Length: 215
Image (cartoon, rainbow, N blue to C red; front, side, top):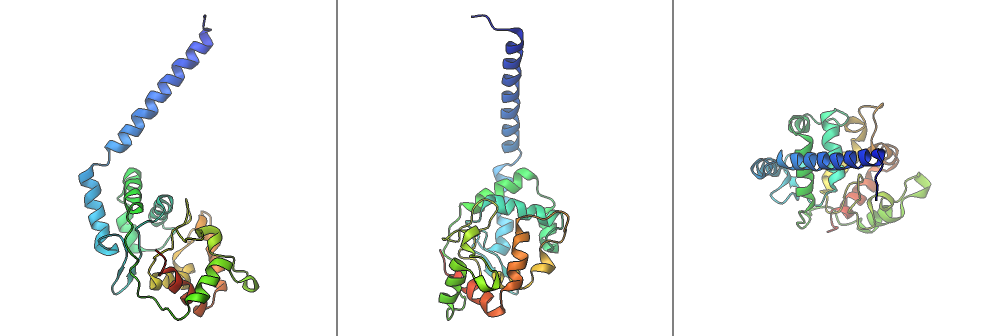
């Protein structure tokens, strides 16, 4: 069978591209050594808990265990670009390479400790109803529509299951001061701004308490 010169050239090009992409993937993996990754993971755990379960000190540190990798990478980028306001996390994130960001996100995604707990339990039924059904009269959609019925998130939508109740409360009541700081460069979190505003303080506490119980 004869192969035209054009087809032969295309085949050579595809072969070269495939080799180049394979070399790039290999380079990406090689740039993150296991020793460097362990060092960064250990550093993260000083604030976020030994199993990434979160930590409750003078300020609640969020659970990273089981978090969606795409969401974690997006938020690290938001800290770096100052779209999300947090001076501590800017200092942590801006020294990370894209490869290290992905490697860290994958590592934390694979952790699955028990929730830290400690949240209020008196309004768990109300919190569950808000999460699964929303509040139509207040234009609050079901949280589950983005975060899943099991609250484990998907893709760029974060896992909320097992998150510290006081961390969730602080984020929702402080949304405008931390998130969406670059109006010209919004991300998925922009859809939460009106939702956070339409929830009462008591409703936020109820949802936060319910989420903290989910494994």
